[in-house]
Image (cartoon, rainbow, N blue to C red; front, top):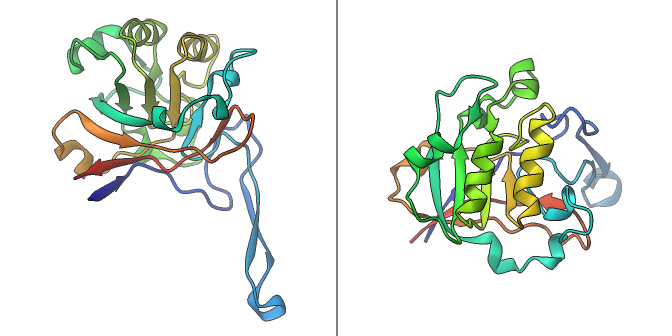
Length: 217
């Protein structure tokens, strides 16, 4: 078995959603003084590669621990929209052209190329491509299980699109994984691919860090 890593690293000062606190990592114990090294992280739960549970946007929705672990693993299709312009929307028509007709219980992974642009730039922070409202509605109509994108927000950086896209998806029970990065070998695999991205077991949380991978037998 081989694993293809789709995750983004987290480190002191790493890029993240500007609406969240800056990422801080401090060494609070070290070998010369104590014989141990320990880090303290100050970080929002929706940072780096992470999942959104419905409770993130839907009052009374499912939290992480309401979702079976098996749900975070399964067959996935990569929708390659690399070359899309900054600030553009991934529409239902674009998805139909890149995905099979039947997507019931499948996972859809959106590759915009923005995972390779990750940096504290105005373009990455505030002008990413995103899923459109009609694209989100189309995926819900297809009864997908989950959807991911290679940026910190599947709905982009501005409202009302961001709020509406999250509401459409999470309101239908479709989980979201954000901040992916697609290495070149991901595109050489036959589709569907086998995806796995288990979140940390934070009780009652709306989201958590995960380590998304493609599994190659």
